[in-house]
Image 1: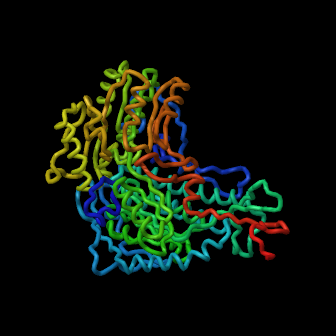
Image 2: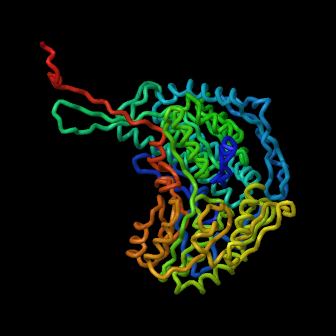
Image 3: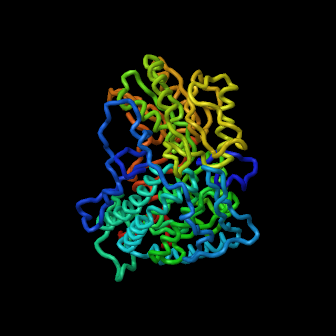
Amino acid sequence: CSSLIASAYPALSPPSHHNQRRHLHPRRISSPSPASLTHLTPPSPSLHPSLTPPLLPSSRLRWFSSESMTSPLSTAHLSPFKDNLFINGEFIPGCSTTPLLDVVNPGNKETVHQIQTAGPQEVDAAAVAADAAFSKWSGLSATVRAGYLKAIAKELGARRERFIELEMLDNGKVRREAESDVNDSIACFEYYATLIMEEHLLHSSHEGKNGEGSVPVSQTIDVGDPGVNVMVEQEAVGVAALIVPWNYPLLMAVWKIAPCLAAGSVAILKPSELTSLSALEFAAVCHSVSLPAGVFNVVCGDGRVGALLTEHKLVSKVAFTGSTLTGSKVAASTAQNGCKSTTLELGGKSPMIVCKDARRDSLIDWICVGIFFNSGQVCSATSRLLLARELYDDVLGELAEVANSIKVGAAFGSGADIGPIVSEGQYERVRNFIIAGVEEGATLYAGSVPPPVEEAQGYFVSPVIFTNVTPSMSIWKEEIFGPVLCVAPFDSEEEAIELANDSPFGLAASVMSDNQERATRISRALRAGVVWMNSSQPTYVQAPWGGYKASGVGRELGPWGLNNYRETKQILSWDQPKGWEWFDTKA
């Protein structure tokens, strides 16, 4: 995951953090349409393909195929780009004394645009605007807030093609990946609109005139004491600072924005300094649907802007996705500045355990999707492959053949399967890890060391597979955030579990076995927040997302994501005629 406020802490240099055809996508979001809510429009089937495509009778990849989609060579039609900050419902100039952000196309290393950045004054203005908007926004009914969320989803759909190409340009994603990210963003807003309407129907029987006077989500608790009534209510948390990474610029922002606004909280978004274009375009979406001023704001800049947000007295909530090292600094800052509510989605070094009875027809597909999708720039990438010794030679040979066939190229015009690494710094980081792996004694079984950055035409890294890897090697222990897979054999289930859990991270894991009892047993033994059985990376908006150990604090998505932006209040009513009579008040 990306380092989003690292430059505010110079000692740190951590790493970061689909398609209309019927292919399964690791970040696929499915939005429900309950029968009780038929008045809400479900996601369009044309935008959200089936999540259960038929298995092909082949071990060849379904995602990485010769059918890759191409896009126009030129990006000139994307101009003009947004370059101002978005505060209190308006695009305004940035700070005159802070440096501009270069927008670099990672496919050719060309600077195509510059974006203005925020300083202390702009961050404060955003916080003041959000705080001023909070009372009215949180006081709106669920019906009204859901209406805004659905309007945003509709406008995202209307601008779908522009968002796709902005993600391709800014991040380097190939078209199929960018398409799925945009589709999933639309579905996420629709899901949270549906969810808060479900809550409204379940927990309240009325609402104020014209959508005013929102009825809180509440429940009554039986405390076993006659004459005492306890209500538990969920209230919006307030101003939330949302600090997001570069690997899924739009989608990771939406994972935070949609539940934040749905809960009645208000947002200040700080996108990665590497990929800010879609955040500013999203601000234009909010302006277009007349979202009340101050409810959503965007401040661009490097880690110093993130640090200003975590320290600001008007910010009540911080939601951060990024590296574990930077996340620890965020946690320290929020603790020292008012003990703010904090959600952290951090790094990973996820294992995939392939048992001897794994389903061979789809095995190579899942291994490759698990590590090579999005050029390996996925916090949950299953980058440590544990292969049953009985399968080791056969699977490794087949895997190398497919990895070597994956086409790497520019997002525009190449028809590539995967795009470039996002930036020069990340390219050098991935390259240095590959060099370190060779120097530490691992075998470079597939792929090669990328050229020095000054010789590269773009930040391209072909899939790499290492064998003869030991647990002490840096390529096995540390998050690389690139298309680099480390493979090791195991001889017993117990050994596989021990190797898988021997990591400071615990974001995700995968178990491949055709024996449901075995797969379930191993899944329960793994110390990870997300475990996939017979797959890798499928993600649904209804289910919780987050990790154990150094991979984070809290959960995103589903009801868990909604409650990230709420506070829980107990209201106790003492309905007995007498008090406790603890003290002698008649003396």
